[in-house]
Amino acid sequence: MNDASGTAAPGALNALTDVEGIEVGHYTDREAVCGVSVILCRQGAVAGVDVRGAAPGTRETDLLAPVNLVSQAQAVVLSGGSVYGLSAADGVVRYLQEQGCGFPLQGGQVAPIVPAAVLYDLGRGPDFIPPIEAAWGRAACENATSGDVETGCVGAGTGAVAGGIKGGLGTASCRLASGVTVAALIAVNSLGSVIDPVVGRPWEIGLEMAGEFGDAGRRHVVLPAAPDAAPAGNTTIGVVATDAVLTKAEAQKVAQMAQDGLARAIRPAHTMFDGDTIFCMATGRRELPETPGFFTAPYAEALNELGHSAADCVSRAIIHAILEAGSMAGVLALADLPSEST
Image 1 (cartoon, rainbow, N blue to C red):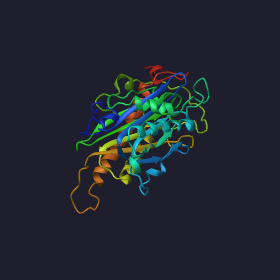
Image 2 (image 1 turned 45 degrees about the vertical axis):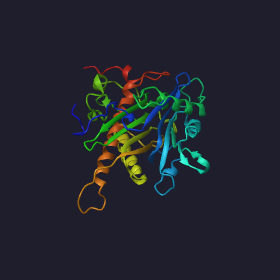
Image 3 (image 1 turned 60 degrees about the horizontal axis):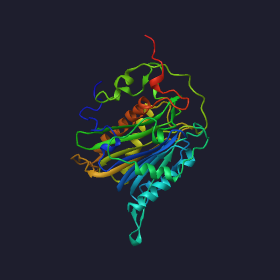
Image 4 (image 1 turned 90 degrees about the horizontal axis):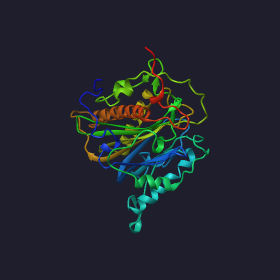
């Protein structure tokens, strides 16, 4: 397929860790069918958030509003376990405090800023409530790496189900012509489907870069019957990251634009039964290019491009999550669905 972004191309790893300063770690309990993913930026990243679903489960999102004091987060937690999964963030806070990473306090102490979002995967393991706790968040930190990111049925995507088939965790990145990198990591547990039922392929398959989806993305599958909606039983959550210098307001705008990629790749999205939440983390390693002229917002055009590319990365990450998931806990993955007869 053609590169949908012109001069843009995937990063070296096609993952969130293509953004310098970002690490990703998972803790996965396959027996409990649940897990945690942690995105670390130990030196701090300017952060924003956008919450669109009607059933969110979140922590520290109010702090990220542009009018509020703290501008940087040291980590974001994505977790299964619904409301119980928010406890995983406590382990991340303690881990970062021991590393000396956080908002500076008196006496050399720090307060790690760790926003979090959870998805609903209760009842998919042997116990309705998985044994998720702070130790899961700490373990995810200890597993964190700036290298390849494991995807599929891992971390926050372990118990995910998307539109009646197995969901999971996916990632994708893009390096713009300006040299700025943007990437996404998404846990897909949606009410809506990632697959167009008419053609049996992902809605946003046309965004493929450098043949990243392979033969699996070209296969035309037959979807199972649509499941009945369960109250608050869904939610897609994720992080977009960039090495660009952004303000808190700009990070929030990128998070807002990134939600467009979620809405294009999952249909329907942002429903009453989803808690769709996207964070943005900007590590500030590279200035956005300015546009000369009389206009009073010299970075506006570059921010438009960044937000648009973030949305595309979200869509691509969502497709990767579905393609790379395996059948689990009685839920069939796309890889095990029958092909449409020709």
